[in-house]
Length: 195
Image (cartoon, rainbow, N blue to C red; front, side, top):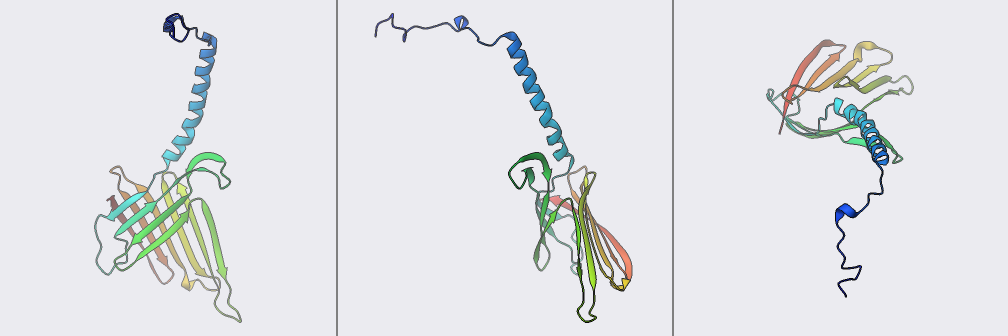
């Protein structure tokens, strides 16, 4: 190759023209700002709800005869797409809790934002009962409520309510209220720390 060849020519950066005018650059900047500011509310909305994900251990173990989980493993995925794969604002829709008791491990999955119930009807005069459940956000607290009661008599009524939240130290607090038709209600607050 010769020294005069176009492939060997060095062109100073200052001599390369910018095809974008100042007006185009301003418009591009404004579009980026609009795009970024439209994404902020979706991220803030998801951040307003606490993420309970992780491994937790009970801070003050109870007496050995009390059936309270000693440890929890929680998965709370942040969903960004619908079931059909379409984008949606980030939101917590499921909470899967692995509860480690003294003698067993139980796994429960809660679908946040759901409410429902079931009914069983006895054949030939058998017992009938109903149950109701609700899993919903109340500000920054998650409420899980379950009610079971016979439809013909209120004596077998039971209710189990849990309220989950994170305190200022990042601990998981769960207030549990159990009510039965044949006894007084019992309330306890469990404190878990991250493992």
